[in-house]
Image 1 (cartoon, rainbow, N blue to C red):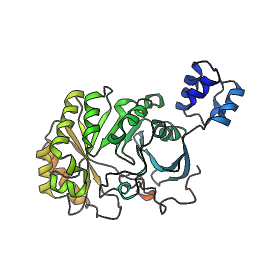
Image 2: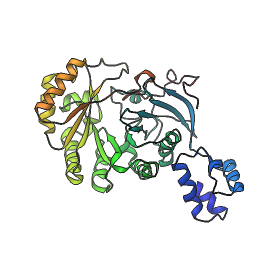
Image 3: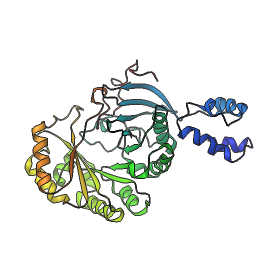
Length: 333
């Protein structure tokens, strides 16, 4: 829309690059773009929305995590998260869809109504919003939705992130194993963007109960593509494994996971379960025993640090449900 508007007004071609440079550096709006003529800035503000999204609420966790609920121009809810870490990481968790059609049982997003795929601009505008709050340096496409169902828009947004300070090597795209998109990502994407697999079980029967997508695309086919990606880029694939008490957290299941993955192609992130209503989370002792078993199998493994649980911003908690959308934001929008 912006490029077309500038072209119709007969503006020089470099104007779009000037505007994008300001936006990527965190400019609050057109008025901050001092190398543009004032008349143009005023016309832009009147005619071209600065973002495709509007902020409905914004909340800040005790640990510094920020969760923002956006609305698209046609009214669909979208949540995204900024996670701040003591080591200096400022990581964005970006959404690719409003809702998700794949109904993973541990995930709150799968329990809300699916809206639609987001456009590349709507995905990028989530990142730009947080860039206006300060520097950012990492991004994960692990928010609402299955990125491989909307891969073209996800990649178009990811390819603009380096201008915001987020390199390809610090960008990760997650999937539950949606095979058509995964194959396209593995075969066609040349940038060194990282891949993450939402796994959560080492056998097809259990994984299908937790994640219905596994009925359509079983583990063997999904892992084959992941190994192909690891060999192609010479980087491990992240495996996300949410720890569900009495479901997938036994030592025997850890042993099976170690045998399934092996020591070379994957790195496992064990995720303490963040309550969404269906399961109980594994105890610290169970998580530690599970981790120890993977280490014995020489599989690289970490336990993810939970961020933003108190504002429903942690992994699996994004839902944009009315009960979550507090009328009074904890942080002014």
